Length: 432
Ligand code: ADP
Image 1: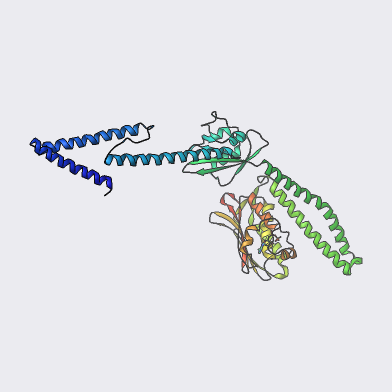
Image 2: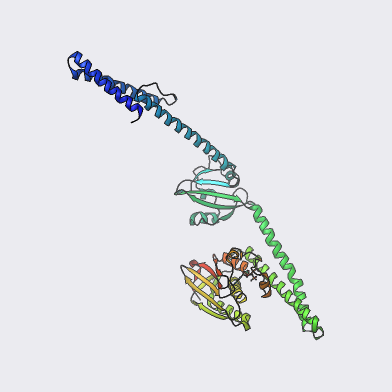
């Protein structure tokens, strides 16, 4: 038992004794006890009244003086109050700091009301980039203030894993990359970042690569033409002939690199919606398999097809040809003679899947995440020797991006690899 309670029980015992003595003196023990206990009750009521008054007068911090159990009760409540006050103070400081941080954030940040499109709060960057004004725009629907169709589709589809780029409603020369971040149960935060500079740099890079490739093409065509003539010329036989053939094979490689760079530039810059149609994938794979057999030639790879001929895809035929053929030709180039190659096209797990499996050299796991980077090669010597440009998988990645697809790579060194292109079921179309 804690001390204040022992004291209090002693006090009650003393009072009962006093009641007895008083009762004896008055001639009735009951009366004596009643008087003493009434006085005790009155003391409790008085202290209770003081407690309530103290709690109400919140400005008066020090607890009232009291004795017995009430002294302890006042003390405990006082300590609790002090702890709460400290916690409140810390919370207020944290809140102020958080507010200052969000205000200072360079990205526009807008908080929407729970479960709605109405704006609850925004920071200074949002006023700058999105033109929101306080208090005019508090409670406004964000779809009334940012009306670009691509933003409205993004806002309403609920696929907030991706981002969307829109011009700033204040200044059309500024490009904003917008992302909606759901949090709590039904709250949403909108974050918009100024990507004008990055976009400009990216466009400069794309233009540079496109221009360089284009400029290199004409002189290369001339050199290739002359080399063809010289190689066929009988006067240039012998050692000179070997040198000319070597020069021709290098110019052919340069031609392939230039063509792949130009294709990549086009894939990056053109609108993916242009020229889409129904791609009859079955015959496309047959053509690729025929070319693969020519490429394999004396190596006699065993090429097997498992193709659902009734499955057609909405997209660009030439782009899909580039992507699929790159995967198939890689399988031939990185599989030793006599190896097996399986090409499949099917509907699987709610997706359309084009896959190429081989029993080739395989790839160590640490290379896999970097394979789609331009000019990334696991074995540079082998890539060059087999006529690789180092751009094949970068092309595959871009083509898939333009078809809402993704590339999955499974591989084990020494055992083989599987490259699978997954397309959403929404891309399935009626075959003609
Ligand atoms: P490359 O023209 O060098 O083949 P890619 O972009 O097509 O360029 O491929 C990048 C690298 O990925 C290749 O250099 C090669 O090391 C590796 N790779 C691609 N396909 C395969 C495969 N089927 N088996 C083993 N390695 C592969």
